[in-house]
Length: 315
Ligand code: SIN
Image: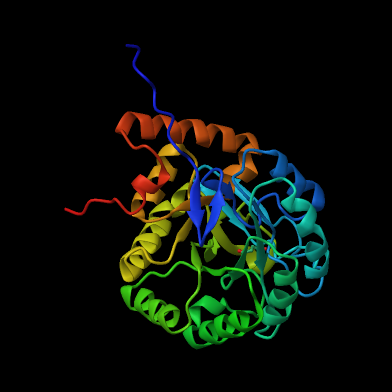
């Protein structure tokens, strides 16, 4: 009898929403304009994630505002986006691509969040991702580092949406801060977590030019790419442990290969988002990651995403 090759199942489920593939763009990477969002729809991305939308359209921070280097990237985009009304109009047509649409929302003040979320919810995206962690708006601290403000925003959003929603958090670097945010999420539950946003307010220097590499904020910006993967994995694991896997996690940070996806799954992510690698490689990155993840699964005997989630061994 011929031996049968088992094709690994790369689909996943987050908050009751089925994703045909477990990887998708991170909010911010090639997802501002209608053309970019439709290209994601035609690609093998497992979902379409919008740029974080604000109340008003924004051109964002002055350029250069993104710079890639060997181990990662730094950005200070400043939330360039079309404004939430434009995305509310776009969402129904994006859903025609037959994959989940995730609307990412961001506020410049606390009351922006429920206002945007209420309108966007009516446009019926599959999920709403509430961005509590943009590090790049001068004078606006990341809400996710203010636990009381985070709880207020989550409660306000919960009161106005009828779609599943989650929060995109900044990286935390101390167990006390993981515990504090876990406490917030116990009191004010969400349907999923996106972990992590860029490692904010870093500084990359070009020694040849003796210069910063991006213009906004004197060169300070959010780090992404390979160098932040251990930080992303630690945050995924900490929140996976805190909730024993009860809140699904979308892992973000440092994914450039199928093995990186596998590590995020082991730590506790049920899906992953791709930022720097998508910026650098373009849409074909999704084909490559799919092939590489299938190869990892086949080699290690995993039948699919769900069998790998949270399976990290401790010593
Ligand atoms: C930006 O637009 O500055 C990046 C968004 C983010 O990090 O949340």
